[in-house]
Image (tube, rainbow, N blue to C red; front, side, top):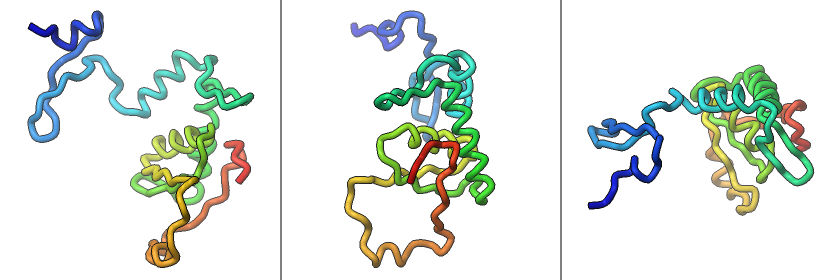
Length: 145
């Protein structure tokens, strides 16, 4: 007989829950209610510890949280809110995490775009909704472009 998943992680409380049309999944019994709650709990417990290391640039969880707060405020001032889509044309850099967390806080939908893929053809750009607009980067994020 194969040991259950709980045996693979001793001390980890798991329980069976029904999701997605009644399918049963093993889930963490004690988990944050949302991704934003998970981030807030992590910041509260580890504010001074390193969250991101990118070359010589290092951000603690507290700094990441503070910068994401500034960016969220900047996005909100530009009319971004819950349910809005925010295209992120950012490379693999700290600003990606900053803007992703900012979108989560606002309830906005982050849409990562590839920085290495070819640009979309003009026909595709012409079909984009008129509500699409380019926002200036938030000065607090450290993003230069």
